[in-house]
Amino acid sequence: MAGAAGDRAEGVGGGGDWPPFAGDAFAEYSSSVFAELGGWSDGLGAGAGELPPLDLPAASASGPVPMARSDEIMPAASGEPAGAASSCSSGDGAAAAAENADKPQEAADAASMKPAAAAGKKGQKRARQQRFAFVTKSEVDHLEDGYRWRKYGQKAVKNSPFPRSYYRCTNSKCTVKKRVERSSEDPSVVITTYEGQHCHHQTSFQRGGMHFHGAATVALAEQMSFVSTQQLYNLPPLRRQQMNPASSESAVSSVPPSLQQLNGGDELRRSTSYSPTASAVQTPSSSLVPPDVSFDMGLLGDIVPPGVRNG
DNA sequence: CGCCTTTGACCCGCGC
DNA sequence: GCGCGGGTCAAAGGCG
Image: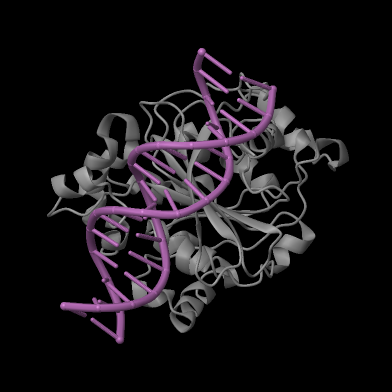
């Protein structure tokens, strides 16, 4: 099976930063959702895992909607502790420490830390790095994002019939992780959560993927089917309790409605929904994609436009 | 042959 | 203190 999943994943998007957005451009055609999560599991566990029906805001149905702007997005991303900036250099440790600061539930995550790591950070919980969740309508679970990932685990998720898959960047120096799961609410929706930032270029497209640099991005966009806009989820750092049906519900419901929190500095972003079958894709106007958009920075870079990123 | 997926076990924190 | 749930490890097997 190895091949199947892997190939598909790699081949799907064709490879490339799938959140093909860059600043305004991104806003233009984005239709799926992505939000910075306050917590690794929290975000998805509570939010993603139990995403409410993706009732797209009015905007979604009709097209471009007022969505998070790059500058609105950046805050959260750039606002992260410097340590979170690079998973390669800072590694979990640094980032971890930084993140711990304001993420109580890190503890929950801490559970996942390796024995050694755990031991090493007894006092400090495992540090989580910048996290972004993308809610995408897709037929494939593992959306291609331009990087190569190695699946290192899969677990059944409570309250969800779909398992959650864990991926790690194949770059030995890169500690970026990715979690993929389908929404129990809407099986057609794939929730991808990234943690950390790549410290290398999208190396890997040797496996038949297409390169997604600059103009290449257009190709990606063209291969993507921007189906529908979904509401954004601004998932606040949820605590374990919030994962309860009731809690999570409130947590989630507090988000989408009007993206009102977008201005709150929290991270929200829309990406796009797409179908893997490029051939059947309804090419979104490629014109929406800046030909010179380059996504060769870390994960964060994939998400945050260079300019914004630097402030 | 190398890389990747699969899968069960293990570890850890949290909530009760 | 116990159980639950989530995250990760590591061995085995499969595929290109």
